[in-house]
Image (cartoon, rainbow, N blue to C red; front, top):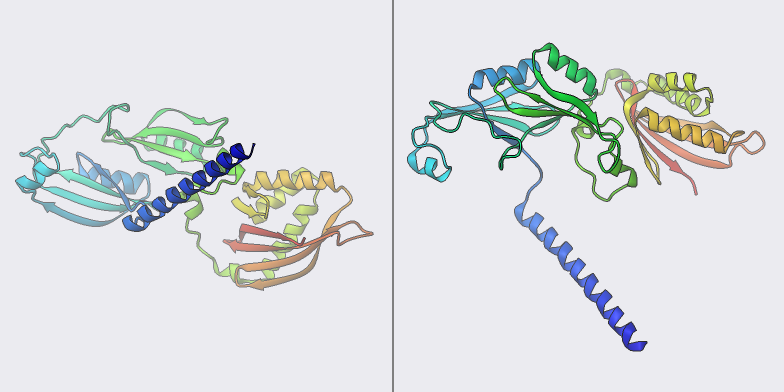
Length: 328
């Protein structure tokens, strides 16, 4: 028994040591490479001007910089597997909103393959663009004459549950993708240590002048309290849409709710569990577009069974982020 215990302890110690070395090697690799993230994605096109027009006029992106035409010497062509007879390259960098930029190449007198790789060919790739409403985005692209490949599909289960996607084809034949998950993906519900980056979370929101209005922000907080006390679903949803952003994120100590529907479901559960309880305000403090609400939750006889503080981030007249702190 003692021998077995020693073996188990030794095995556990060795496993911990391996995990430590593995984590250390990963950290060292990241530090040595110095990689912060993806800067841009490069694609070759047959006609630079037509491609830029598509990205600008149809997708709404902004062309920023241009380089070339640049003559390529024989050594560079050989090193990069470019046909010796292909001409100079012209490069345009395009700002694609909240995400990596797109670098568009056009080779003059291109002698390389003019056939797009098949989907299952090695090296085949595509760019995916996040959209808030995939149905509306598909209808818009169709109105612009863009070919949609198949129908949009929503993943019903697994890590990507809740994600909708569909492919489309550019005027020059490249395959690209629309993707949307306004209420997050399935794997996020288990609160993983690592969450995939998403342009929907990095979207730049403009703060309006009215967002600094203390009276308006106090009114938003008062409506927030009405929402959490309202038991009639239609009235509650109307108020939710009035002051909450559609992709609002509510961060609690134990969970994260994404979107109005998630929050509404949580409110229903809370009301069902505590039918006689009500939220009341203790105090409200405003600082530009940040607001703190100190609240209590309880019955008429005991109004402060639970106390806490909500922190609001208000942009464009709506609550974008809601952080909930509950006193132990």
